[in-house]
Length: 297
Image (cartoon, rainbow, N blue to C red; front, side, top):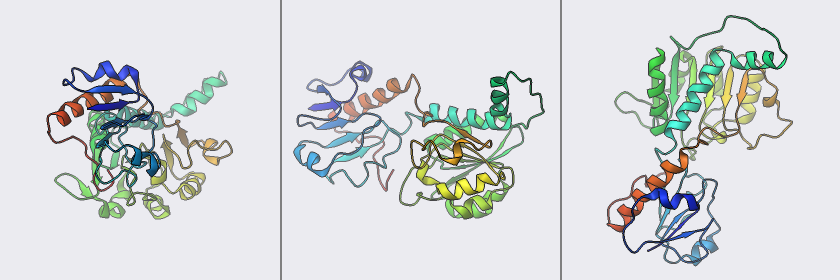
């Protein structure tokens, strides 16, 4: 079985593999392979490229989201995402962004750049009502890390389940939330989920935290609402991305921006290729694969 992986350093991180697995290191296959592991930033190639890969049966992504691959992979190829690999890092980013906002760190950082001792009292996270939209691995990871901060948590998923509300309940839940964290995958159902009505339903002074994808939020509606100063935002993703230099979001004092770095941490390669190794052992043994993408995620 021939396998193409994007990172040479990942080969040793996969652990012991079954006899008969031939690893090829390349950004994308230049020979026919049965399993392909693209790079973190890899996107699905044109259909003609897939047509040349007659032996291909599995694409194992290193990203939590599969939006750039869904609908572009031939039907006989199983698409798997990297659910769980980015949970800790992305959850850390979300908690950091929330704390930075409520404790007003951007204000103090700007004052430091002016050598100004800008004392003032700040808000606090304790007692805040946090609404997490997207109750998958990352959403649950954010919730786990927020619990010690004495917040009240409400989780929302596409479908309700024990302890989790359905997405159709959002209009009733949004007005009560001090902080709204987005951790949904990008699918047809979530594109533009955060529109003008969603933002208008948020309470005055609330914070929107986007650890998802830029297109989940209507960029124009968000900019208009933030320009009023009624809401705050912490954004690791934008639409478009990278954010153009002249975009007003850069200059708004109630916006904290990071350049899509929530999951960009030192340990990500170890976790990613540990998953790849597990998947290859499962595949070779004829066992069901983990994280098979269905319904867009």
